Length: 293
Image (cartoon, rainbow, N blue to C red):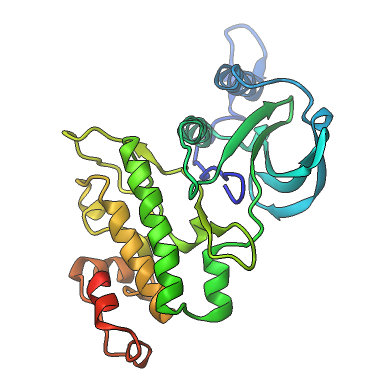
C-alpha cells in the first residue's frame, strides 16, 4: 500500500465470460451477468465486516498522491479534526479479480494485527457500490527506491539507521507468525522528506507460517528474492536475505545480483557470489561488508 496498501494484481480466468450457452428449446443467453453477480456476491461476503457509511462524510479528499491499475491514493483529512491527515486508497471493485480479492482480504487481516512504529498503520476500510476505501497513516517522504534514485547511495550511518528499523519491523512481523516475502526499496517509505524514519508497506504477498512447516509458494521480486524461495522450500528467514540485498544497494547504489532478464538475475542469485571490488566499495568499512556478506 503506498501509504495505503496496493493489492497485487491477480490473473483470474474470465476467458469464457462472454460465452454463449444454448438452453434446450430456448434462446442463447450470456454468461457475463451471472459471473458479475457471483463476483459481487463474493465481495459482499468478504467486506461484510467493513462499514458501509459514506466515507466522504468522515474524510475530506484533498488531492491524488498516486494512481495504479486498481485505483487512486488520495491525501485526505478527518473532517472533525483537519490536523489529522491520512492516505486513502480507493480501489475499484470492478477491477478486483478473485485472486486479487483474496490477497487484499488477507493483507487487511494482517495489517489489522500489526502495531509497530516501523510498519504502516492501518486505520479502517469503507465499502460502497463502486470502491473499497482503505485508510492508513500518511507518509510524505516517498519510497526508499525514489530516494536511492535521487542520491545514488547512502552513507554507512544513514544505511545503518534505515536497516536497523527494517530489522526491528521484520523481527516483529515474524513474531506474529507472518513472512512479508516482498521486501524491497519500493515497499519501504519515509515518514517525511527530511527524515530517515521508515515504514514497511505492502503485505500483499505476505503469508502466515508455522514453525514446523515450510513455505512453498515461489513469490517475490527477482532482485531481492532469497535462493531458497526458488527451491519452493523455505521459511520466514527469506526476509532477512532481502534486507541484506537492500543494505548492499544502500551502500553502493546498485544490486548485488543483476542481469538483463529475470532469468539472468535468478541465475546469479543461485550462484550467490557478490563483488566488493568495485570503486564504490573502497570507502565502505570492513564491518559493513561483513554484515552484508
